[in-house]
Length: 323
Image (cartoon, rainbow, N blue to C red; front, side, top):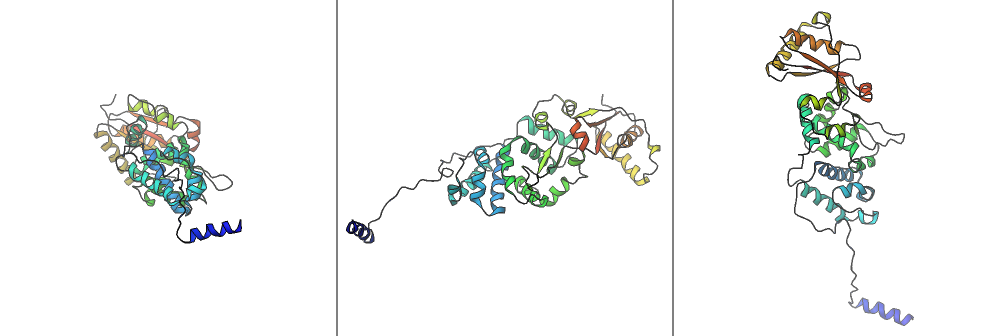
């Protein structure tokens, strides 16, 4: 037996090469299909996976724990052993290259309603994208999966992640859009999620309750779109004389703003922030009446959960031609 073993070793030593068939990674072994337009969520998920790998420096840990995210982007889940292989990470990088080769698919009602709501509330592009991302994080668990690996769950770390996911806005713009006095937070549409006692959050942002269902439906007009989460409140009876503490420059600017909105033919949507009381509805409404024969409509969040977090009321000032 010892002689046979020595002979085998000698045979290998003089040049006999033992060939073995290596099993490829399940994630990297798929045949690449021609690039086709994909949903925006797929691109966001791929960017988040790569950002999380870059931030943690541990591709094996990230990719092995993100089974749902890999399935969402069209790749097979991998075990830790395969997740550590360079070809597995390259498969994710190639998937992102293919996904971004063409504009993403955004023709479903959800994205159209995001744009319509952005026009009504005068949201900046970064605010519209953050709103869409926050809603999808709550509706698509695979998108939120990599966020849970980012430790510790600090806002500065999440801001970097959001900038990487969206791809077209820097951290400064994202911080400003998510400020507590900004439109998204003060209206209750989007807020920072709270971490659990271990400092882990499933996703950095959370949206208004049922917003995914609301924005995924078809609406005949803007009023129908606003109706599910904004309720029309009673008209306020205060006038500009009830606000003597406002400076002349402030009231003058407000008057010119209302006039510009009315002259545009579509009116204006004003978000008034205040802790409580009718003042946040009455002040812009009074300027709407002073600027001409125009009607006003005051709205506040319709759901109890949103009313508890919102610090603002919307006042829509219609032009004279509106019915």
